[in-house]
Length: 222
Image (cartoon, rainbow, N blue to C red; front, side):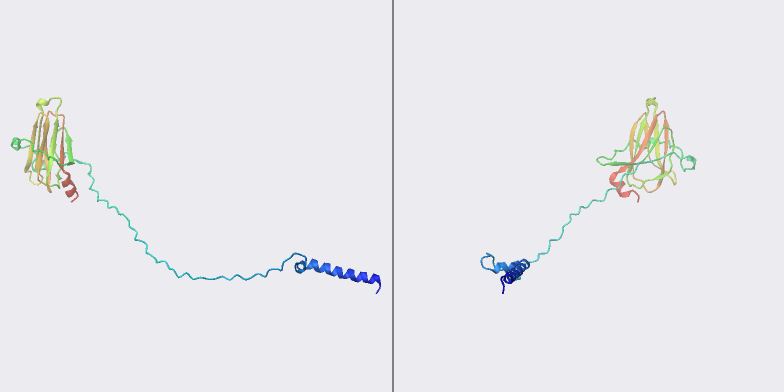
């Protein structure tokens, strides 16, 4: 073999070797003196499943306690007092004149003491007349009259009688001379009644129809 052919053969071997290294560089790791290490083969991880046999006891949640506030039923509200007016046909009543013996009813009664009162009706006028018929549902109630006479108080005179509407019988009455106040306690209820009123030399008067609050709550709208 000639020298030129030998160089060509060696050059071909070197070229093949270089190409092999370029395509497979890991071959160098196994050659002595390269300082490389053998490639590590990954080891599949072994997962150990441990069953926890410790079971926590399940405790039921305590029942939910809801605080309920009981609101007491409100008492009936007090309605505005009803205003009484004079009847336009006084002669249709069984009695339309004031009796002569009004003095027999004497002085006023003692008003309710220590009890809250409710005014459920009233009349306010300056002249006399016969009121419209009305009925009171409360077993005990009162007529509280107040007479005002500023111009000629010395001549002032006020008279009132309460009558049954069916026959005109007088239930009770009062007379106020000059000016002032008087109370009559009435125990007639559940029937139609009316008032006969006369005035002289007064400026005005007002009669309040009142009952104790407990009666008002118990008997209203019955």
